[in-house]
Image (tube, rainbow, N blue to C red; front, side):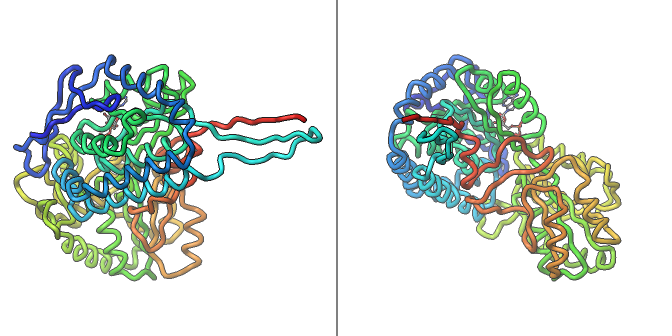
Length: 469
Ligand code: ADP
């Protein structure tokens, strides 16, 4: 069993109100470690360290902060295989994707190291003759980050890196399902000398709440469920704190009759089933032109069959277990009365769920509307492209949407009409570049986008300055 501790003021420490076991979802009899549950006192300590070091961090040059982000990237690179294996063991992500996540972490840190030296404002011509007027982006102070388990390293980093680059200090409350990955992330931050500016308080929802409510925390960036995101948004709104909530999706792929059906089937199968569908951008609905339904289903079956299900530590595995017994039970119950178009086999041991394609669903059914976070794809057919777009938009979410077509006119129409923050033509709904803006329309996100240059819109506030002669 691994040691999992809070990381406060450059020290790894125990304490709090108890612990939760972090369980290997592939081998549930293996406890990865005990995740300590932080108390209000520990959270207070972490915020205090972050607050007392913020002004010195902010006063450093952007180039100096960039140097420390590069050092963090170096520390992650030096332990990349160990980090990838920790992701496999703790959250059941297939090793190929886990290695990709670690590479993404390094890319994120390199990118935001570059952002740390970019312009921080604009000169705005003044109405007063001879005056110099400009806008200046400043950090908020202490920023709180609350993250899920499905990208246990990359999501904390794609929030922490821009926050730190522009001069905030950070307190992270990682998911209770991925405490060991968070421990390793803290160790790499420690190796990079970031102990004063990056704090980690382990725990579950209660610990997250103490972070959101702490008076010194000026902004909260959250990724997780719909329900929690809304609760956090309300708490922040009451206190006039800035918030950014990423809350998932019911992502759609449309396959038109003119598409390359084999390519489309591979994209839809991969988007829906890889990592057992546990990405906020995973494809959970497919709308098929009714003229090609039969042929597409044949291709889709073959494409899903080509994605090996099993031990995520094996190089060839594409689909591993889901995160927990609770998740497994919830997904199995949701499809228990469904009409199966396809259902894969699965290992008996571990939290595995069969990959399935379900049909005969109405647009208002739970399977069409609620995020399941599992390898379940709801199939609809449409008699026209307009009807397909109407089905695609019939959801309260709007994160990612894809279209398979060879017709540029259809592609342009889709880009214009689909209500989603990310639109992908002849690409699956997952796998957005780490330096491109990330976020959704409607119920998927609130606040400004994450990642890329626009990430600074959330992590800074603007001061307008006028200097008269
Ligand atoms: P998931 O179901 O994907 O785990 P959650 O929304 O439950 O999504 O959890 C995402 C993150 O939010 C986790 O770090 C979790 O501990 C935290 N969390 C859960 N409830 C709350 C809450 N009420 N306030 C703040 N953070 C919370």
